[in-house]
Image (cartoon, rainbow, N blue to C red; front, side):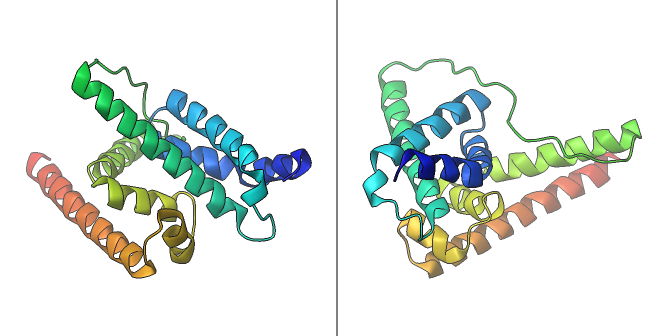
Length: 180
């Protein structure tokens, strides 16, 4: 891969990758680091990237493996010396809307926060699969290549994730009705 091809890869898939990194890490600072590390690693492995294949799923796979390695390292450090970790506000983009009523904005923000909490409560394997599918808009086949699992397992994790979020949302709605 040449510098020009890397530049094209960044311009075509950079925003999708950054969005995925934000959703995966939950923090803009960590997402920035992961995003940069991903493209550095892609450039290091440039001989393996075939721009005629599916470079988007390739860079998503690099990002996912870098994130998993970093989490393993952090977990080891936490066992040795637990640290209070500072996390900035979750890095979810603001949904643009033409409705200016403050009440509606508060309701939308609350719903968005609740959905994000439901997603955050999913087991990592299921959450990662859901993020790849919904935020990165990758196909089941692409996700199976990235995660190195069969397509059936991807579908199973998607189904479990949807059911778990549905159950969480039902409990949330029931609690809201009881309090409201």
